[in-house]
Image (cartoon, rainbow over all chains, first blue to last red; front, side, top):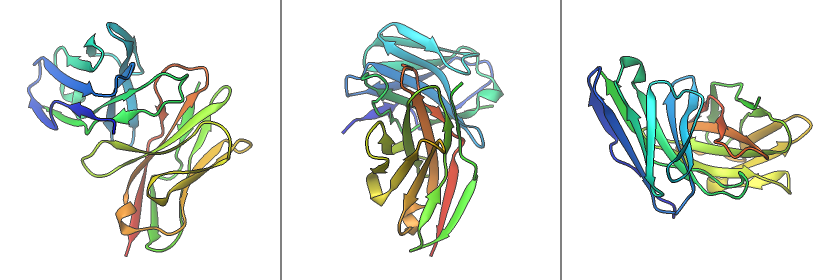
Length: 114
Length: 114
């Protein structure tokens, strides 16, 4: 079975702090994704990566950055956390195959910024 | 632009009755369509996908979905609902030529009463 793990299930940070969210997948997938989920808005793509050291902006990249130094690990960074970044963050991974591949999700990190 | 619409925020059904969760999409070209389910405080779990072939797709937990190209719909169905099916359901689409992430609907909460 595909396994996608996220470093924390719950996280509480203060405004202005630098926050790191880690995601690891064990299926050798090329693609990895970070989404945020908010009630009534569904999932919105923040960033994705299709290879090591490669990244692409999604729909809402402002205030975030990412890092992919190894194929299995994709990190989301909040350089200076703000209260409007309080949300559920979901990591996903998937293979290539022209978009046919299923994305598999981690359990999510619920981040609260005070 | 690609988009997905889930016209119902909530669907209520009685246990044992058939259920339908609606999804319509808009893409250029052939779509890849997905359904995911999310239980409380959990990540998204893959249910089923349509890539090509038979318009009726069968997935996990007895769910199925029907692809209708003329109506640009991909409704999720189950012949007999269970209380344990109560969850948040997301429809998602990716266009054939796109190597990017999925576009998600806003989600539909399914509530099955006993």
